[in-house]
Length: 224
Image 1 (spheres, rainbow, N blue to C red):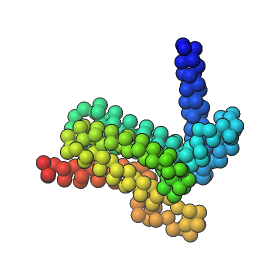
Image 2: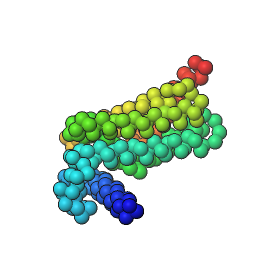
Image 3: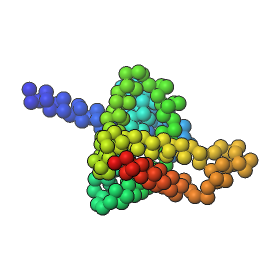
Image 4: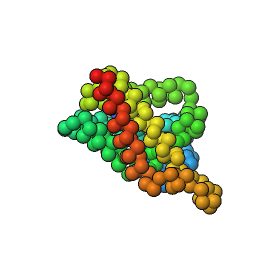
């Protein structure tokens, strides 16, 4: 019986290690590329696995990158929770630390928002319904945890934290997209973001989020 349990545990560890290797290879391949999803064959080659083996873990390449995207946003949320829980001082100090950490993470991992931009239009359209439902449920679980930490750290009414975080995500995604431009617009000299603001993306995002949170929390204070 012990041998059976040990063999099962070893098999589970091997599967987890292979899944991790697939996600790591997908991460490196995507970050080094022009923004398109690498093929399953490229990912398999990078891990030393057969392409068929990759499909034992993920039904489509889009599922691989959806899992990777969930992993990346989970890291962001865990870091945000830690900053909010460990930063001492006023509500403003906690928000400042949280926003600084968020912007720094996005600046250090530019591939995150590039991959996120493919979420609805590419990844979700090529995932089975069952996998998509599970993916959404896991993301929501992490999101609710983050919202709860925000509520507790900033002494907000229940549910306000998740609302603030989702709006932060929407603002971040929208601002990032406004900074993107095609080769055609560059050659034509039409780069809207550069005409509107002189700041690089990170600085502009930091200012925009700071202004949003300052206004949002002032409304919270007024309602108390």
